[in-house]
Amino acid sequence: MPRNIIIDTDPGQDDAVAILLALASPDDLNILGITAVAGNVPLALTAKNARIICEVAGKTDVKVFAGCDAPLTRKLVTAEHVHGKTGLDGIELPDPVMPLQDQHGVDFIIQTLRNEPAGTVTLCPLGPLTNIATAFQRAPDIIDRVQEIVLMGGAYFEVGNITPAAEFNIFVDPQAADIVFKSGVPLVVMSLDVTHKALVTAPYVKGFEDLGTNVGRVVASWTNFFERFDREKYGSAGAPLHDPTVIAYLLAPDLFTGRHINVQIETQSELTLGMTVADWWGVTDRAPNAMFMGNIDAAGFFKLLTNRLSRL
Ligand code: BDR
Ligand code: CA
Image 1 (cartoon, rainbow, N blue to C red):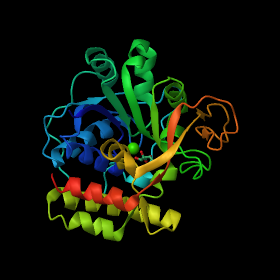
Image 2 (cartoon, rainbow, N blue to C red; image 1 turned 180 degrees about the vertical axis):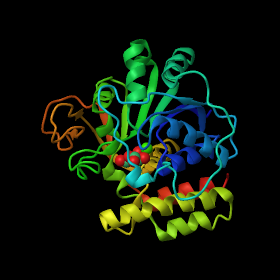
Image 3 (tube, helix red, strand yellow; image 1 turned 30 degrees about the vertical axis):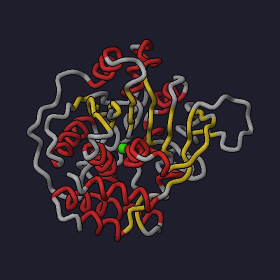
Image 4 (cartoon, helix red, strand yellow; image 1 turned 90 degrees about the vertical axis):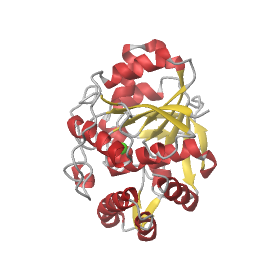
């Protein structure tokens, strides 16, 4: 039986690749819906981009919802400097024709968790945690019903990317992250420690192109686009492909290793706001609340990704 998931996302080219990976895997994953959130670019664009991505895959029956347009308490910080003006820069794509659902994304999350049997829905956040935290605040009864949250966010050894101390998704809405990390739901965290090892180097980009399909061409253009920015920044051979690690974990958890540890979110300090304070070395007696991933079999990950994308 495929696993029921809700993808919560702020596309973003790497979100886009994650969504395509999920769409390419219907035997494993049943996408109940995609909820857009403000993050890499404002909500109007993330809600539009989510539909563009579904249309690239020819999956126009997927339900896409718009969620929160701003973090719980802070002003929205966006990342056009990485993803371009549209969030999906790299290749010109037509506006979507498939509809945006009328229901608010948060209401969809709440309703779905209430309707489906308890413990059968996994949440996959690929952006700031605003939608998930808002749902938990409004409907605390759903918290116990979540099977697992597998998210991209945070860092320990790699520390930060948007500030010296914080990773983008957590930094944009630290209050929301705090709520999610304290919720008691089993968490799997794909940190920068993992994603900075999933570098999309030129041969992998070529591998997408060589699929000879429209999806392969689009993914090659997207990954090529933000690869330029990240290559300059990190001086590495390729850019981290962050968000697809979440979906890859659902498909092949053995590609990843990490530690079940305590992770807390800094919500006060101006200097280190949004830092994921991860007790990697077990120096406190704080109870573990997250499976914090630190390593990935990158070759295996790209093999899985390219293989699955070839099915679209
Ligand atoms: C995260 O931030 C976004 O820019 C990416 O889409 C990813 O979710 C990486 O820090
Ligand atoms: Ca993202």
